Image 1 (spheres, rainbow, N blue to C red):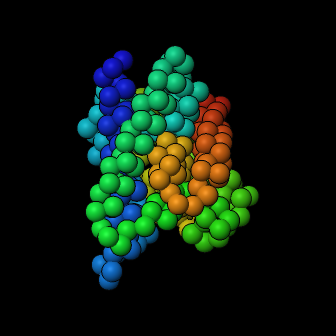
Image 2 (spheres, rainbow, N blue to C red):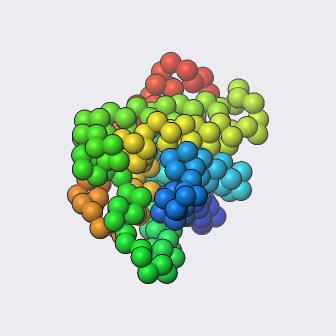
Image 3 (cartoon, rainbow, N blue to C red):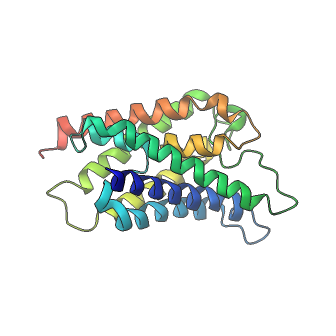
Length: 228
């Protein structure tokens, strides 16, 4: 079990460090910033690389919503869920702390949103709570469908990390303007702790919506698509 939890800690650390780090350090760099497209690919690449690196150890969840969906889908044992969540949260908070220390090395740095998620005034496009709730549920549901399908016994072997990483890239391309993209409660929690906004007060939505979406996606897979 220690190997699995270590893999989840490391994988979630890399996802937050790579994805949120790209938003905090590189997205708005004067004249050379990578923008929404670069951040979307950073999140996708972080999952893709860690899925290949440690996915064979823990399953490569790096996300409490994914763990819940895979448990509902019969891909992990119920007793492993809470330890996985603890490792994922620890990895996300550790990555956020390291990013905060690095970013603080610039005299002009101000945490502001710190790549946190939000709705209303905290949404990049000022989308309301209902929009945020719906998009997070829908995108997390499809994320689970893709994960369950790409890792099923009938799927081509060895390509699952590519499909999963590219799907996370697509998810970010769609939803960064709406919520700054969560679909991952651990990712949302880690950076919210360091934000200078009301991100913590809105964090409930970025637990509720991804968990609901993951459960919905897993049930859709089991009822309509899954045979394994």
